[in-house]
Length: 303
Length: 136
Image (cartoon, rainbow over all chains, first blue to last red):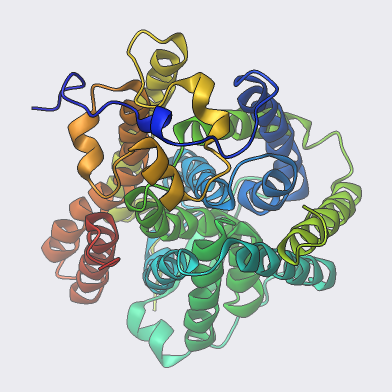
């Protein structure tokens, strides 16, 4: 059946190169691996997903087309989410039942976002990416500090779906009860998050956690853990659109996935030694620069 | 109403187990296939030295310029190392649909019709995305 020998020969000779190449081919994947390793460290320390840092930084500094960068962003967020998921579910910190309804809405819109993205010209996508990153920066800047969970009023949908639970906080050793509120608004939020994530490959940790914690009233640790499960489901639907469209380059995806995952392991070890608030501000500055670069690139002012 | 710890819910334990098996095996496969790709043991469809000439093109132009198949036609070229790696990436993206396929009968067994329906709809969305039918 599937035989390489029967494969059509590579059509390179018939097609002129897109641009002259000076450095050997391995320089960029190696640089990508190093960059994603650093992104993995910073993402964990600053409490943001890898995808939101990866897409603007790599699309701004590397010669890859945005299509391939977006797919790599999605896939590295997906790989991180599925590898962290089992532990979070087994500990009970993440709730599958809580994740499922919101992930369903997010998946539909993530798929739509990915489909729409291939109909939009590349420069417009760059400009939209820049604007989106700026809005994310604003969201991160204005985000309220985590609050202590003080109970919430449940709505009818949350009651019907039984969106309540309890998990053991391993630090305090206490059982934490949670109940969901504002379910309908939550569906709307996850539709928007899915759409943006699918379009730009940004992952969704940057928005899932505030939506689960501040809007739906889930305690912070439960929100972070469940966000991971939502992300693994939502990113899958968009990832298939990118694969189907031929927008996935293994030479970009695999070094990025390995780099971010190794970096995240180092980041987790450094977590107790560094000042998270300072890092959070550094991330905001980095995103501001990367977002500006994407906007300027999109508007043709800095190519 | 009393609430049960999520870690004790049978569907959550099953999902965690399947997710662990899927993520470990697919990510290990991804790493192994990438080593095969880098070492050149199996020839790629697009020579790695030529990649920098093409990775700045859009996905559609890249496919047209290199003859890389889109949709599911890459399955016909699994003997090429770069396409093999794409299969590894597809395995990573298969983990969630497989886990949901396992969840549906579990919710049916528990007579949890609402969550069985949600799991079934999720599975349908993921299959729709993977099939290429959503793209038309």
